[in-house]
Image (cartoon, rainbow, N blue to C red; front, side):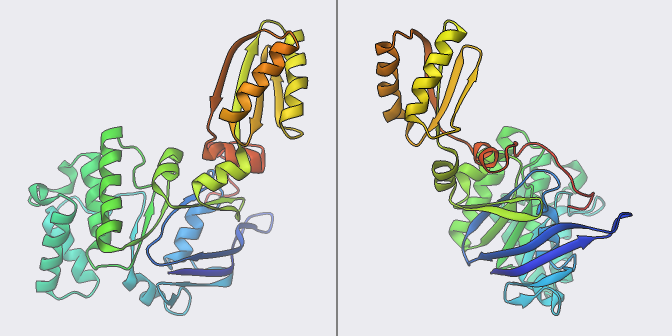
Length: 323
């Protein structure tokens, strides 16, 4: 559904120019649910704009839904749905009318547009709201309407840019229920960005991480966490002298650079914390180190990014205003 090779987008600046996306290679097959992650300014939105033919690449190629984004942008748009961060619907017409108008814009006949409007109203539980104006809807209801607008022409591929940002937890869960149902019942290919890392971790079957315009990781969330971050074992002791001794023992267990000290706390990263902790505690006891607390934690996708780049996914590092 998405096949990009060497995709680059360069923006002009006073100093000459900056690459928001550089030599990006990406393949997304039909039926996948892919979470596209990166800090602010990493190039996520620039990629989405190129994939949806809203922004031409400076160089490289991309075929989306079988169409070239440069030579056949109309063909790309006819076969995809795109739900941006801002609301898609206007304020002056009823929800049902907005959906019919959207269908007509995609070339559906009037009768077919009305049929599809009724179908997506049911699909996204919007029928009770069909006679209301978008301006009267809650944030979660408007977001469901945005997704309905992106689906009215039956796209093979749906792009979602931050679909749940700003919503309360209940509305976020409701949006995800509909996204997952779309995929299960209709075989939709879904490519989305999100700042909620737990969503990508639990919902997406594939996670792609971009930083400074380049893809730096691409795998399942589980494998990325296991291979690149590792579990965490954290202990606290009673004084810094004991912490230094505990850190020395930890370095026999963990790889170089995977042990850190902070006052009376020692943290080490290991492949499997549950199996490593008992042996570590026995070694500490044998060395006369009294442990005050001990805990283990599974890694997060933010830990993966930290391991790859030395900073958090939640940190902004914008290269330019467009990325």
